[in-house]
Length: 92
Image (cartoon, rainbow, N blue to C red; front, side):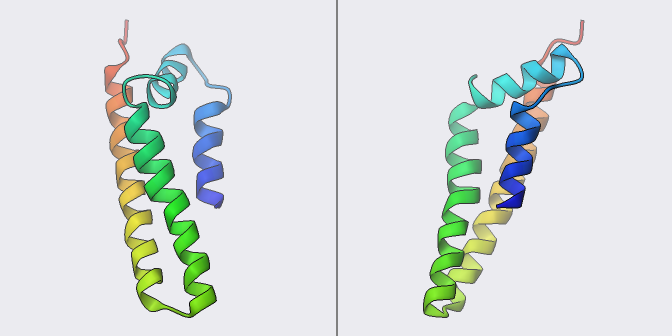
């Protein structure tokens, strides 16, 4: 859950310049929002957290593996979206 807190702090906190703030808005409220909220937060953070709790309750290795794969996929998608959002912002 610490990673999700860092992601939300990075996106919702204060930004050094207007370009970074615009890139964050593109992720959270713009055209990339469905991929961000559904893919990164939903499938990359919430589902792995639930799977990790289920793995602890039922002592199940497949839940742990599934949670790890989804978390890594969510991280990959977040990095991809962050790069795309940064490249979408006009520089001048």
